[in-house]
Each structure stands twice: as C-alpha cells, then as structure tokens.
Amino acid sequence: MTPLRQLISLLHLASPALPIGGFSYSQGLEGAIDCGYVRDADSAERWIRDNLLHVQAQCEAPLWLLLHRHWRTLDIDAVREWNGWFHATRETSELRLETEQMGWSLAKLVGQMEWGDKALRAHLATLSPTCLPTAFAAACVALKVDEREGLAAYCFNWAENQVAAAIKAVPLGQVAGQHMLRRLHDAVLAAVDEAAQRAAASPPQLSTFSPMLGLLSSRHETQYSRLFRS
Image 1 (cartoon, helix red, strand yellow):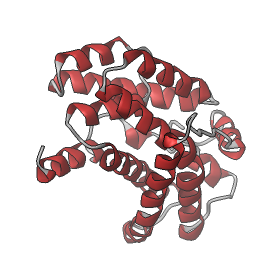
Image 2: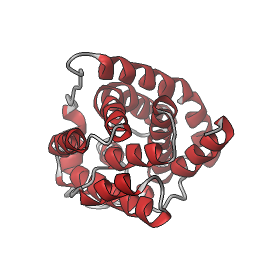
Image 3: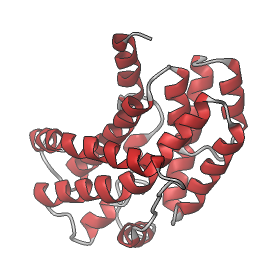
Image 4: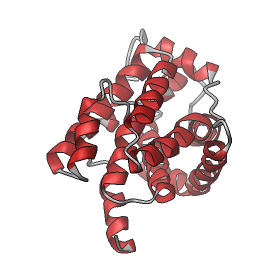
C-alpha cells in the first residue's frame, strides 16, 4: 500500500463520522466534571492528557499493538485471549458496554465493507464480545495500515472524542477545544512510544491501575443528569 493510500485509510478509520457510536461516550470524563475535578479548559486538558499517558499508554495502547501483530499472522487463539483479557479489565458496566458496543459496530462494518481477506473477516465475526481495540486493530490489518501509524490514529481518535465530550459537558468553545487538541499531539506520540516499549517487553508490561477512573465510572452509572453513556 502506498503511503498516501494508507493515510486515507487512517483518516477513514479515525474519522468521527465512522458509524460506531464514539460520540455517545465520555469514558469517565462526565463523572469527573460532575465531581468538580474538571471545570474548565485547563483541567479538561490535564484530565485528557493524564488519561492518555497514564491509562491508555499503559494498557489499551500496548494491548492494541499485540492484537495488531496477532491479526497479521491470523493467530486467532492469541486474539481471543487478549480480547477476553481486555474485556475482563473493564471495571464497570458502562466501560464494558462501551467497548462491546463500539467493537461490535466496527466489526460489523469491517464485514459490510469487505475490508481485508475472508479469513480475517470470518475470524472477527466469531468473537463475542468484540472489544473496540480488537476490532480497530483488525480493521487496520485489513486495510494494510502499519501498527505504529494505526496506533497513533487510535490514540488520536480517543483524544478527539474526549475533547468533543469536554466541549459539550464542561462546556467549552470550539476554538478552545481545537487549541486543546493541538496541544495533545505530543501526548499522542508519547503514548505510542510508551506503548511500543511495553508491548516489546517479555512478558508484555500492561497495567490496569486507574482507581479514580473506575470510581468515577461507577458514580456516573447513577449520576442524576447525563449527556453520555459512560
């Protein structure tokens, strides 16, 4: 695949217009706003940056790299193991619902768009539940997107969804959100580098330690007023 075609594939996968429902979730951000941890642009950016570097980069991002590598070789047993492991680490019903729903939607889209070869699509269709990083990694392999570029798109898409949630729920202006997203570029690159190191370790060094996120997600399930599903 040419670099330009790969870029277009990445733009397609990372687009907010991809019909997998990412706009419906805040991943604990709305709970943080309700509790007063996030109250303005500075605290919103700090929240997103910290989650990107200390939560995503330490678990979901290195896991994504492992899944991408196993999809490339069609090692479906390893894919199932890591998919199940990630699902088990989702601490609350909202976080489980989020990865299940978005993963299912993306896996269905891969089949409908006939991305990749039949073997990959057939294996992807057998997973239940299908977690989002599993489906996104499969989509990148199907579209012949390299792992580092694919992970950067995955992390940027996560950050972009968080900024969009902050714009609606803090609330913030659109220009403030764009400034925030621009300043997060370096954090996305740092998360990719950290993930690569953790995935390369033997055994892989994945950490799910994020107690505040789990507590805020639990509180959000009974929060009086909500814009988002997590």
